[in-house]
Amino acid sequence: MERFSTGAIVLDTVVQGATRDRIALFSQGTEDPNPIHTDKAFAESAGFPDVLQQGPMTTAHFARLLTRRAGPLNSLDITFKAPVFPEEDLHLTAKVDSVASDGLVTCTLAAVKDDGTVTAVGTATWK
Amino acid sequence: MNIEKQGMVFPPYTVAPDRRLAELFARGIGVEGVPESVPPTYMIFLRGESVGANLFEELDIPRQKALHGGQRYDWVRPVKWDETLQVTARVKSIIEKQGKSGRVWFADIEFAYDDIRGQRVLTEITRLIERE
Image (tube, rainbow over all chains, first blue to last red):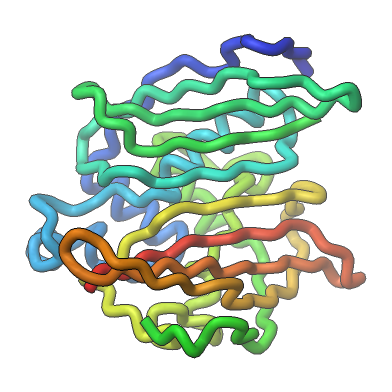
């Protein structure tokens, strides 16, 4: 697998916004019964203008893309900061913060909408 | 949220990766076909809901007031197809804070996934938020 140094950009990519159908598939695939992802009326009753993409969908994008670049991860820690609605693209970035003497790479992550809203931040580590 | 549930440990349950569910999971993120290997975050707290670790019911969190605050995974090794993991869920912490428009509760629930030999495979922490 590729070796990284401090400051390296590991990810700088846009993932296409999920359609309602894809959001529903992800709910099925994660066995998530929460109607907030599939029922607009329910989402509105919870104070949102539309159904929500699942936060774990962002986590899954990071996990998949980072694993492809770096191999199996040691850890992935994501904090969801703002809701993501159907069809909203996310710009995912990952930048290496440090590389320890034992080879542990620590990376800072962010997911940002086209309008600049930060929807998730986090860290990932691997060796 | 029922703050008295802090420290609660749910009865262990088992989860085995399912290729059909993994395919739906992958299609959800725009990838077609059954993944070659188990997606890293396939193991997710939601899979316990139907087998005894229903966080929303147990912690008394109305879904309309619930938000997902985040997730953390610590892997010892990747999960393999055709293995069954035993999962033990524990309510690690519940914190109440006063927000601008009422109280907000933050719960961290830890899920420990062990293989058939009792060796840890991964740990997942999910963070649930309830708004008043």
